[in-house]
Figure 1 (cartoon, rainbow, N blue to C red):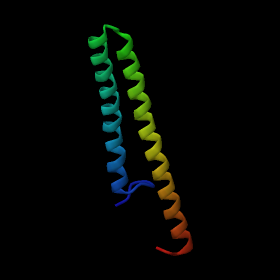
Figure 2 (cartoon, rainbow, N blue to C red; figure 1 turned 90 degrees about the vertical axis):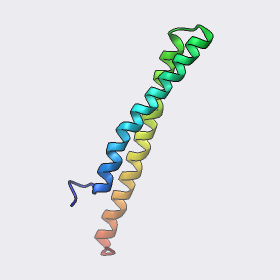
Figure 3 (tube, one colour; figure 1 turned 60 degrees about the vertical axis):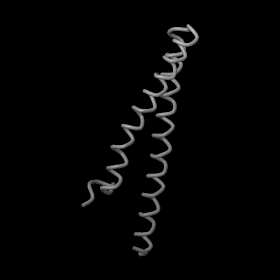
Length: 84
C-alpha cells in the first residue's frame, strides 16, 4: 500500500535519514569534544564539530532527496509511457 507519492520502502528510507542525520551531528560533536580535550581548545573544536556534523547530515539529506526525486520522476515517466 502506498501512502502519498512514496512507497513503503521510501518511508523506511525517510525514517532512516533522521537517524543518519542525528548520528552525523553526534559524531561531529564527539570528534570536536575529543579535540578540545586533547588540545585544550574548548569550546571551539566542539562548535566546529557540531557545524561539520550538521553539514554532513544536510549533505546526506539532500543527496537522498535528489535520488528519491529522480526515482519518482522515472517511475512517473514509465507509467506515462505504459512501461509498467
